Length: 244
Image (cartoon, rainbow, N blue to C red; front, side, top):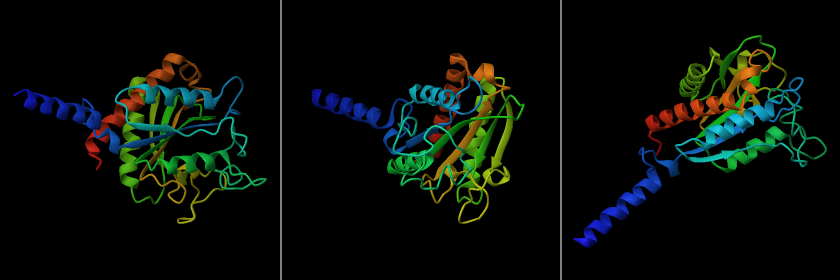
């Protein structure tokens, strides 16, 4: 009898170690977060600081998965480690003085983790809208599922804040700068390009505007609220996906 009780206790222990209290297969789900590393985003406003705080809040909230943050801030071995656009060749794919860019470094680190899910977190600027936007990569094999994921995440953030939900857009529609996907030859976000990022599910979130949403984005409470809403909805989506 005692042996049976011990065996059952051990089985329950290993179940919770592998699955957690909610039954999610923790060890089989790997998430990579990429907060913006841009510090040149307006007077007395650091997009890097804001986005990192949001990501940290999300990572600290339960349930915990295998979660990693990729960030080039302070890395002197790369160029554009604290500035640059996700849509400019010089700031992303270019090699300068033998160095890769901050974005390239972050994606290299992300790919080493073999994540199923990749989430880039940014703030918008110059929109004059207190809003949240989701972006996905044009022509992606998981384009439809990425649209669903991005849509759910921005809906959750909008519900938890006063941000307007501006929907999910394709990275090819922004008309920004000169980085192009080599498969479609359309303008793209470097971080979402399937030729660069090996994660099957990839979304980029533009959370708030650095002027219109300044009060929310510079508030510790606001950043925490955004991060927790983001994590809660991500966990719900993961539970439904039943990753193998």
